[in-house]
Length: 330
Image (cartoon, rainbow, N blue to C red):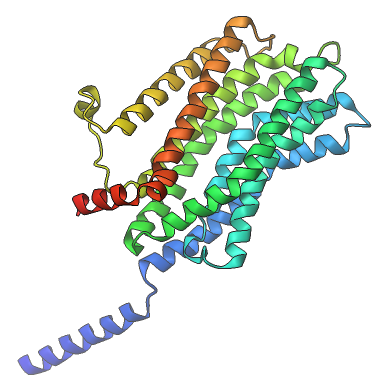
């Protein structure tokens, strides 16, 4: 009887082993679900460019509606770009193929289009200041259209170098973060839409709804920066030890980390100061709000430069220091 039980137990174990062998690895399941999430994020990422393109189409027929659609596109700018950035990381392992590189580059171009299309509508406005802002936004669109495709391809290429278990964890964390990251962005954009929809043609729309559009955009930009650092950049910083509150308060961190921390803190301060002045009913931007906006943008672009230097440029210019860091981590 004992021999029979042992034989049956072995047979059961053998059957379990065969069944486990038939199951796809966890990494393959994760990557498969990531492709499905990517389709959804890609569709949501068309909201901003779609509104901007629609504004261009109806500009000659109804200038007021076109202006409202262009401002709506800017209100959903951060939401759009967050979805496009998430879509970029939907099929990391295939970044070596031409099709995947083309798709990643297309997402980068759409990030620029989300700026350029509404800017084109503004640039043809009869109001001098609206035209000025239009050329500025178009310039940002051209800039992002130029730099985003190579940055996106480089970022995905760096992700593809992660081990399967590391990449699986990073992808899971990335797409699980979206249900909590996107709703606040939509809420802030919709808050601006209330004023945009109720605007009239008696004065330029930026004079009627500059506040709340700009404060809402500032907070949304802060949200996407924190999201990017937490879920896009963090998986690449394997040699960096997670900081506790004690480390942060005692400033126990590297020089570049300290610069990033200070820039993020200053950027957050000006974003929340702008948000504190929000008037959802709509009013023009005053000098104080313009000053806060330019300071916010200064620290935002400074932080972006430092992060790109730390993650992309530094390993290329100083590969020996990156290798030393990896050896130290091992």
